[in-house]
Length: 282
Image (cartoon, rainbow, N blue to C red):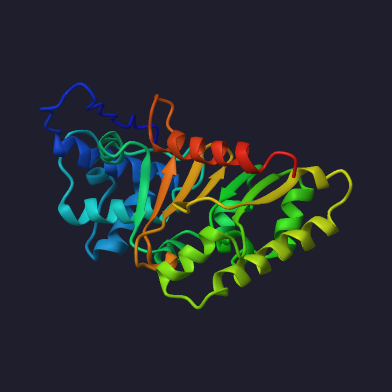
């Protein structure tokens, strides 16, 4: 316990070649830290996972100066992934993740489709403890169809703020998207109108004190992304691609990093500009 995790900064070292042995040791230390286990407890867990006996002495050696076997490194990676979906704050970062983070800005997950994203990251993990949710896109199904409106009511009453922008039903640009995805005219508009009615139902049930924390509006502009910004730290961005249904488009999970730049700030700026043009006064 308490093993320091190596952090490798590559920004100014284009020719840097990582010490893979040290990365493997750091990965093992990170996995044990996430489980909150002693070396003996962690050895027992790895013994179960690998199918062969792992000793406490081996764990100590692998975390300090020896190179863990490949099966142990794989097991450690599985433990890191199982420890959470990557949406919680303050989770330890292993050295391998830091290297990937340096190369790919603040993107922490890439999923080939929205359905695969929702299979890996539950909306409860995203929204249950949120204090601020800002969202823009087409119908915002992840918020209105996947997340129960009773739960939405509860988090707003509990202090969360929610600002949402929907593509205008029966407007110019939602008709363009229906044509792009091959839907009958009015189908996406009807879905968006339904989701707007859910927002209205939630708004009508809010207390007077909580009501100002829910604001929603429509916009009629070209559609490029669904964007969900959570607590100024986490972003779910889903592009709209030509001739591709929205549900089949990739999803990016992005976490705000302390350094300047990064995709989180880019998508936050997109939402803020859209809200300034369409959301004020609603």
